[in-house]
Image 1 (cartoon, rainbow, N blue to C red):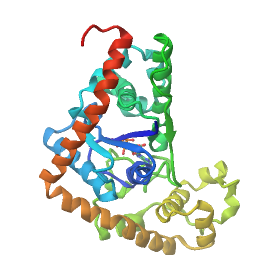
Image 2 (image 1 turned 180 degrees about the vertical axis):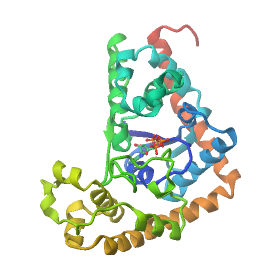
Image 3 (image 1 turned 60 degrees about the vertical axis):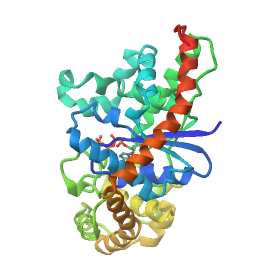
Image 4 (image 1 turned 135 degrees about the vertical axis):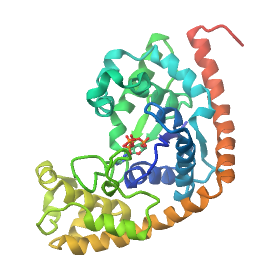
Length: 341
Ligand code: AQP
């Protein structure tokens, strides 16, 4: 069975990183796999969310799925809290997962920061819930950005331990799908920091709902360096040499974004712009970004103005998702030895 599961948190300000690292790949995979795409609201509340904004952000993520090209008749689109199997299986998997494993998760360290003692327990066990999201559907493939790779490795460890503990071949060992030329889009203000919703600077990211002027301004203001654009000599077997990457992180971030948006290899982009000044390249990047993103932003605005339509799609998706997850959860109960029908 080739089944895809992935999710996006409704934490506001969806950005180009979410699009290139995840949502655009969701669209591409629809033809080949049975796909479930989830607005992971249970994950969102691991840090405080204003209830009114959470509901609006949930619709925004759903609108971004639809506007990017997810077909809700074909793929299953829903919000996580509407399918109880996620929370239930998460508890069971929390009893399989080990504290030592969670202690190694870098995202918790980054998000909890120095205030670790005051972070929610939910933030700490977030990866167990993510494992439950995937395994509740026995998904075989998970498209994500590179930042989620470690959590997926944990999902594999949890699935393997469950199978070993109960001497079954029940959960699949999932494969991450980290696709495209921009699997880790970096901040426009700092080429060493991930483009992120929670960055306080709006200029650090291109939001999917940004208009043409905002896109142009943010790209013009994006941090660069004084040198002209490099050529393909910075590649070794198609990959960027680490020393070059470390020397000019902002330059390569913009070049990777261009490659991903134009669906061409980094090598082709380097050949195209070799020796050019950044000011001219930024004009090209702005034009391309507007051509690719503005129609999505406009369609998102249109959909968000019709919450009833979006809510219906999510509700229907939740029924279909529940129909897949419930029998799997029932089997899990039997394997564990829980009494019941
Ligand atoms: N910068 C990025 N480059 C490539 N992919 C990215 N993703 C996130 N940021 C980038 C991918 O988007 C999907 C959904 O992410 P999420 O919203 O569920 O969680 P996140 O990774 O925590 O996203 P943010 O923007 O960094 O949010 P905050 O600031 O709230 O932590 C995932 O597949 C992710 O890999």
